[in-house]
Image 1: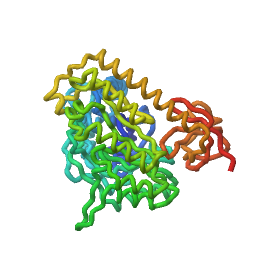
Image 2: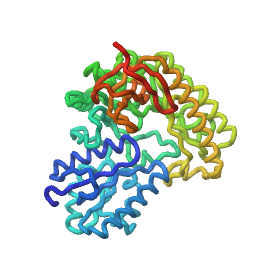
Image 3: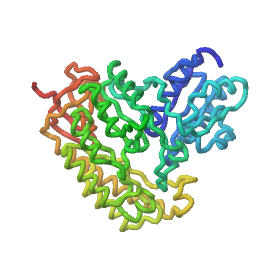
Image 4: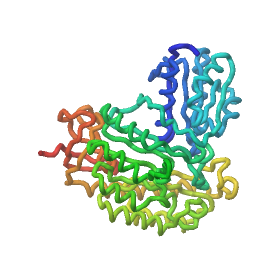
Length: 444
């Protein structure tokens, strides 16, 4: 290994991938590498990849072609692919002809220095072995891409839900939870360093469970422990599986004002028939009961979701069920996609991807149009309210304005009056768009 070699990480996909990139940066820093924020200055370029949809993988292949052309001008550059796509497509990546030197799955980050030593010796290197124990709980992530205000904390890894459309159980392995003491210590350290918001991450945070000599820490227990660090530390979490979202968690949220009034609860479809095919293990009725419980405990809580359009055999009636559920749940925001078959999943083995692309596109357009109306209505309802906003930085559109988020995770833009990132500001909402609230600092 070249002492002090500069490395650069590009991250694609979910928040878990960004959290993992911080772990990778820590491992490499401790091995003598130096992080740079410009690929052109790096001797090692790592691509942290996502496999959740075909479109995500196509972006990676396109980027690898670009890096291959870049490498022709600088033969000394090393290129590594890490993360979910590396786990899924090791052989294809190494044999692609795109100059990939290294492939490492999500559980192999500790051995990256060893793999890179092999690469330095002129060999290609790979490790995609999944672990039933690895949580990286003793590694302090390097917050190299952070705004200094908000940070992610991975509390568990893996997934055992095996939704029919999803590759995550195959790319990230079995569920395992971190020692809660390491999580609370990490959150406390971040707070002491000036961070004012942490998001607890997991493929299904509700499944978090730590058993130490018969003393069990559940996810609601963990949330309470992190929230108790300081009332000035906002606490978020993602993602919740509807089948596991408990009233115990909702009661803990009510008990701590600094636990954000925002829940992401992926529904995927409003049709019971499709939900069963998806192996989601809840019904439309169960989901709406969970929504009603959230509203009961926290009337001011915002609700976001994920929706897939055009899953295998989805009919017009199934699609209509999704539309009606959206209307009933009144989501504040949503991530919406057309179905993308992933090889190796239950759906790819059992169900034909038989909904025509043009039908998927039309249904997705209808879903997006409806959600824009729901989001606009939700934001209009905040006009006239005074909301607490955590300042994150300057607005992208104007240096004269600041932006921040409410407890409900809504973006607010307001005139800069000298507040700094990390400040809490009371803002009176004066206007809105479907995506953003606008306001002025409220007179105290």
